[in-house]
Image 1 (cartoon, rainbow, N blue to C red):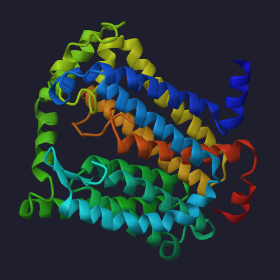
Image 2 (image 1 turned 45 degrees about the horizontal axis):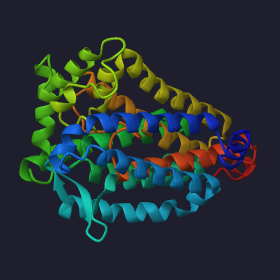
Image 3 (image 1 turned 60 degrees about the horizontal axis):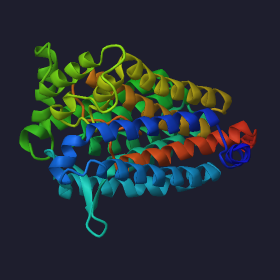
Image 4 (image 1 turned 30 degrees about the horizontal axis):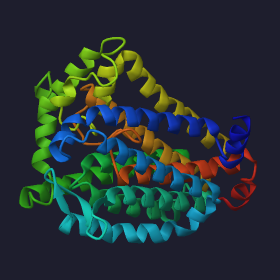
Length: 387
């Protein structure tokens, strides 16, 4: 046992607290997915209740393998491929918007017929934009306060990607935009320029609303209005939120026990968007606080990592990918507790998922790659080159 732990410490580089937090998230994921997919198993898999547990387990294992491989690489490799990923992301988003698979009245997915699964292009675009923006901010550090040479190259990528994501997935676009703002703030971009970007985003959003009136199949304007109206006028929320609050109330302090959820049979997307409610129902307030503590712990570790890094490519990547991960988690929890309108975002590394978990593992592998070189004091080249 001692030898195994020693070998594990040798193989797993970087911030080991982050490794532990991610492992705990996946353990919670397996427990939550197994419990919350009972109804889905009877509907889709003929009552095979182990199907989604096994599927989630294989996806998590594959994701950890990718994470391990990426964390062994030098993070500056992602600096070199960032422009290529950004260029690929744009046509992928356009294709998805025009020809994507329509699931739940939203075109967010590209179907891969050969392998029989769907791919959410916005997950790839989020990674591509954050890496590209990190590269741009880091390369402009010497004149980051200049409008023409530094800020203008930052505006277009953010507006283009978020504008292409927003028609079918506004919540993801807003989360990504917020992460980009955080990167610019940490990257010392002038506040007046950041406010200017926010103004441009408001103008772009107004254009989307206008397009939604003429092309309702392209822009989900009716859904946005319905969800905002539901949140602002109905104190109890819609059906989903009502069932979510019932689940949380059922949980009490200690919960109903593993596998004892009642609301999993009534709550739509109990295994995805509202898995947090099921976890609280079964493990109580203590379980809910434990899940929150995992994301808070991750937030503090990436904040520490950004502080120890230079204000360059490594720090920008951790800021963008890390904050995006945490933002998404707390927005999901806020939806489940009726603090914000229903958004459709999942609980990262815990909700049932395929490509979303893989893309999260890629992001976490890159963060751990940065962490590895920060912890071993091999980030000196980042300081010298401002990359």
